[in-house]
Image (cartoon, rainbow, N blue to C red; front, side):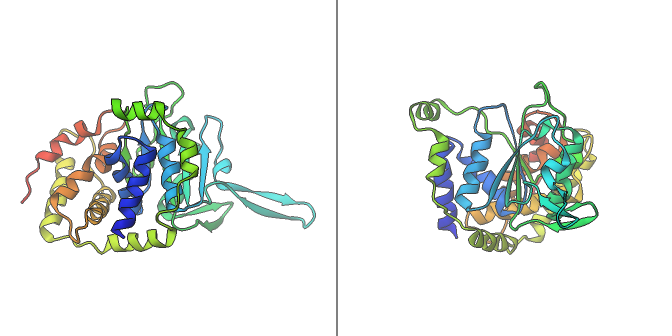
Length: 300
């Protein structure tokens, strides 16, 4: 399992240059069965990262371009009348794939954004009173433009909370950008990538992640972090119970990736910004600044 994880990270690093930590966070999110939000300016590789992960995992991938006029039916699907048989037949939308890239999700209206809520939380969609299960595994990887850019609609807190992690890629360093400028087209390279971790292996690892041990002392530390967010004047609204569970799930996956069978405080701290940043403050502030007060909470 560890060899597959290392190989996957290594292959992704050949496409997304100079972003090893961000790639590991993204993989950690998927191993924890979470959905990923990538927020940054256009052109830094958000869509490329999503496509790369889907290719390396051998998962059915579909990109949905969110625009201001997109409708829920464009995402979920719709029933179409069959004149020959005199009945309505449901035609599944692009959400019926294992990896759904919601590209520029905050360019869509809140009505269209909300079409993903049930899918992300319950891995099913309900259309015209009938419920349809989604394929497994199922991941939503959404990209988001900074909120100050023209034509964006802020994601409501309920939508943000569905994402296990939010990460930012940022500009590449000078060496990585020189390699990028002089190298081959990234999209062509993605097509040549082999499947490193097939869906069956991915699901085994996801199950193994749930078995990572969490001590009572670690739970005390996690709970202290949660309570601090609710009582501190630093945050208008603290972490919800779902946010606390998300923090533990991500920490377990990070520990597993580090070949540990138990979570340590450093695992919680490693994923804290990505898990808690978007839950504690909306908009586009730096996540590290958002969680800085949390890092001062004592470990008992």
